[in-house]
Length: 233
Image (cartoon, rainbow, N blue to C red; front, side, top):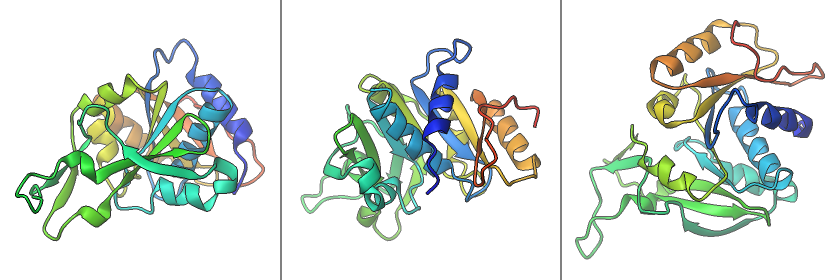
């Protein structure tokens, strides 16, 4: 993969600017699939945990995708190995719901927190979540909640929460949670010339009640990217 360490340093410094305000929960999303939002989320978590020395939770909202845990495991030499699974909610709240609710063999309702676990990454103060798709039964559906309980609870236990959202062309999750995020960073591939989709995403996030910090141009060639570019597009 392309080493984005210097880009992450500049991105992190940009996000610490006084104009951004008290940043604790940050979502990263792209307008189109394949533009690298998950890679940027992962690299930023890695940088903030290891280079900035902060505690970080990387929350993976792409519940149907390959998952951050799998990507980190593939590059364990870079990120560190995954630790044992732990509870991903400090108070039992969740950003998702599974309907209809499942029951255990004792006829008790299966708590929604069981569907989400977390793993420590290497020896840094960095955790990433994993959705337990294997526990979803036929006929059940999963929905992202338009509630801030989980984000507020988790923010008490981490310096930074990075939310890796699926691209808006596949899911509206980023818009659902936008009002509960401190900021949103949009990612666009450096070779992408069509500005309409990111402009539409910017407007949609704003209309949903979110705050857009800016646009991160993800490089795929040697051209230097722009960081949190003004959204004139």
